[in-house]
Length: 225
Image (tube, rainbow, N blue to C red; front, side, top):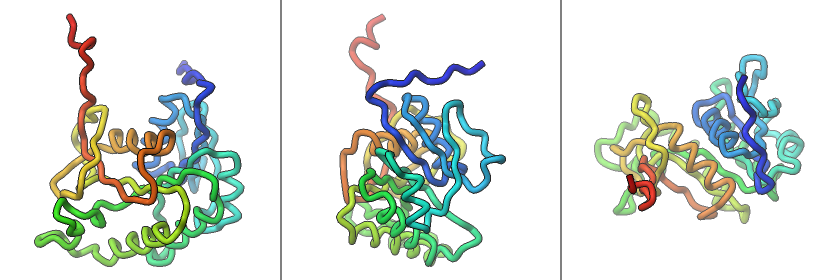
């Protein structure tokens, strides 16, 4: 029998939209591991294996009224959304507009796209020589969504890998903020740490952050044998 994570009086109420996706699923797990109250929004609750203690809901992220009902009383919203049945050029900007309208008082953490990050010299990763361009039109739909956020006065942050997700490596238990770098990798689990950190203890607002894998520093106490 799995024990429910202890409830801390300082825990936050977090809504994760797109909880069945890889980024959303790991964000739910990380938030629950820390004892936060989590509501997971998925298309098919029957197909979603929710961690113990997670409330599961359905809703339309492009409908402000639906978002408003889901986000009522929530401290933060983590959104990692995509719908293969809809045109992303319409879906992604519509989702950001609905999130801004439906959850105006919640901290919004948007799962961004690394291709849009500027590198150390200020050039977006997608504009670097040699960067694959087959999905450039998709990159631009994410840019349109990011532009909706940038034009608002809301408390939001976008968080993406600095380069790409590491699909085969093991989590290191931490991350560092870094500029765009196509060669940089981070696991979904370590990316989720950044998502939840920005949801519950924000370090930035109105910006797109890139993150890379970085193990937490060992304290002096931990090195005493």
